[in-house]
Length: 299
Image (tube, rainbow, N blue to C red):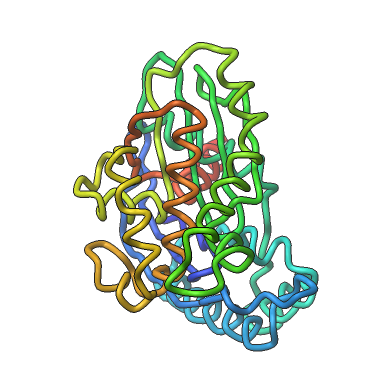
C-alpha cells in the first residue's frame, strides 16, 4: 500500500510517499520538495502576502501532480503553523482547493508535538523516558513521556523564522540582538523547564526537524548535537551574512537566514533543560502522520 503525506510549511511543500508494511517501518518510495519560501511573506497583520499565497498554491499543485502520477492510495495534506496561523488562512485553503482539489488540513501545535513524539517512540521502541524537541519556522514543539503517547505536549511561539523576523532582521547580527533572542527564549521556556524538572530525567532526548539536523551537521556529528559545540557557533553565525551561512556544511540556502535564530533557540533551551547533548532523529511529524493513517486503514 502506497501512502503519501504532504507537509506544507514555511520553506517548502514536502511530499513523501512510502510503502506501508505490516510490523515493519514504512519503506520510502519517493520524495519531492517544492519551495514556498514564506519567511519574508508574513505581513504586519499576520497574513501571507499575495506572492506568498501564490507560492503555496504553485508548490501544492506541483507536489499533488507527483502524488497522482504515483497512484498512491491516500494523501495526508497538512498545512503547518505558517499557514495555519495566517490571518488569511481561509483564502489560502480556498485557493489551494480550487487549483488542486486538495483540502489542506492543520493540527494544533500540541497535536503536532504528540504525533511527532509517537513517531520517535516508534523508532526508539522500548521503556524509558523520552523528551522531544522540534524547532520549526513558526513554533517549537516539546513532548515528554514514558509510554507510546506523551504525558506532556506543548507548542511555544519560538520558531526560527518567527524569531528572525522579530529580533534579527539585520545580518550580520549585533550582540545585543542575539542577547534579546536568548532572553525571550529563556523567559518563554522557564515554566516548561520547571515542570519537566519536577519529574524524572529522561533516558533519551531527541531533536527532530531540519533546524536540529542542520545544527548537528554544522557542529560535526549529524546524529548528535552537543550544547558546548553549538554555543561556540552562535557568535560565528551572528557575524555572517545569510549568503555566507549557506556555504557552511549541511546548511540549505533557503534556511540560512533563520539559522542563527535556530541556533540561539536550541542552545538556550538546552541550557534551560540542563541538556548537554541530544540525539537527532530522522523521523518526525510526517512519519507520525503516516503511521497513524496506516493504523486507521488497517482498522
